[in-house]
Amino acid sequence: MKSVTVNINSIDKVKRFVNVITTYDNDFDLVCDRYVIDAKSIMGIFSLDLSQNLTLNIQKDTDLDAILADIDEFIVK
Image (tube, rainbow, N blue to C red):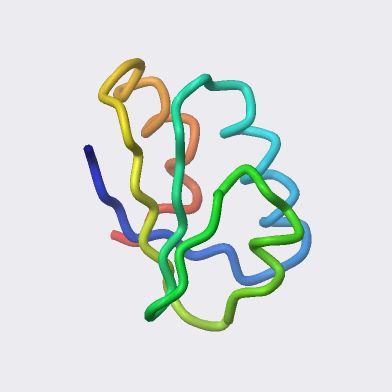
């Protein structure tokens, strides 16, 4: 499992983020405080506090380099 910090603080960013990760078969979880939701669920993402950074857990290491490259614009550096 790989964890990265992401920021998806606007409606457009959420749409782009979900469109990118749904192209992969991996399981993704977004963590905000004590809440964990499926990162492929646009409605689930909107239930989180998007004003703060979120932790994205990528469950399998399959295609990890490609995934990280595709979501680079959302990763907090």
